Length: 105
Ligand code: FES
Image (cartoon, rainbow, N blue to C red):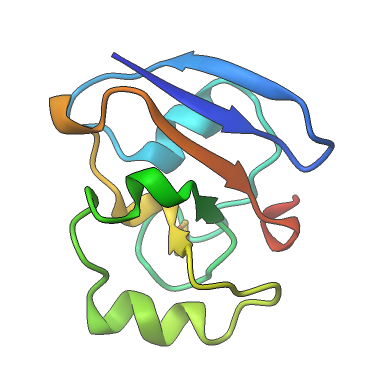
């Protein structure tokens, strides 16, 4: 499985993804610029990503907790999600997203 991640400078990376891992962990593990300050506890919004339109409906809907946290992030758009709240599964093989400016370490 893989995910396609565009970083804040516009460079695209293809990352090997493991089932059950949080997308945030995969991105961080590859050393891409994502702060993810709270380590995946849904309480910082520094793992903010913009999900490509074609993938938005395939994701598990955001919980109220995630929506509240996103409200505090900058550069919010309709396709904003917290990458620590997206669990990798076979359905998401090929997932495309862009790291938000507000995720920069
Ligand atoms: S890592 Fe803090 S909300 Fe995702």
